[in-house]
Image 1 (cartoon, helix red, strand yellow):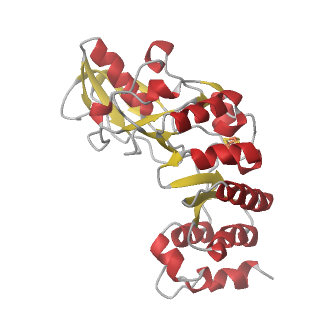
Image 2 (cartoon, helix red, strand yellow):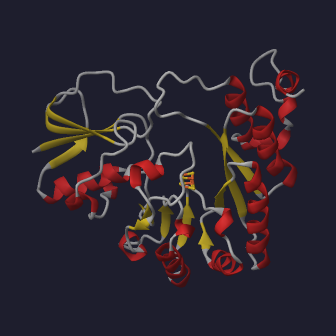
Length: 310
Ligand code: SF4
């Protein structure tokens, strides 16, 4: 069979597509990135985000299978594919030391802005770290959504420390779950660049402060990165993001405007785009205050304080 793989809206390595490729190659099928000038027996089209446009052209194939959160949050890989190792060869940009995966899936929480519990259910074990760290790949990009909420996840983290693997939990950790013991474990792990936390509500600022101080106590000196959802309240969002600017060098916020997956017509407020444009570009974030940021000619963000802060 001739199989086409099509990533509709993201160049980020897609684990499902890598596993689908592995599955078909194991059946001696020809697998390649979709080329609209060719005809395929089957095309897999993956879309990550609900707010990005659909693939706008005819797909030249006898059969097309659509998948990914952008098409259907409930769709899962079949078990025979899900258990496979990814085919890293389809992404030449992934170096031979790097692997991608999940140790757990799901989350026990139900934050109103998040699709994870609806998509994956409660937290549960998924893979062992040694099934991800294959072929000498010792730099692991782990996409678990709430690893600290799982006893199995904590055992895996102990294993990561013991095996001296370098990791990035790129979806963030939950600061509320960092005890003294967990802080010691986190400080003993080799991190790729930084430890990431969610900082989505005002109360999580204090939790992130507490967790980072505990981890520092055990000797961690790297960077911290904070995912900050942007909801309706400009002042609250600004204060939360700006807290980490005031804190200085090792503490970096990252803004995520709230996306309503049930509302394809949602318009992201301009203040959210501008706050993200300021905080997420580190050279701008480091060099100016938000009120002095001029995202467009003739518009300075101090206007938002006049508009929204009485
Ligand atoms: S804790 Fe994180 S993964 Fe879990 S529901 Fe909230 S935002 Fe989603």
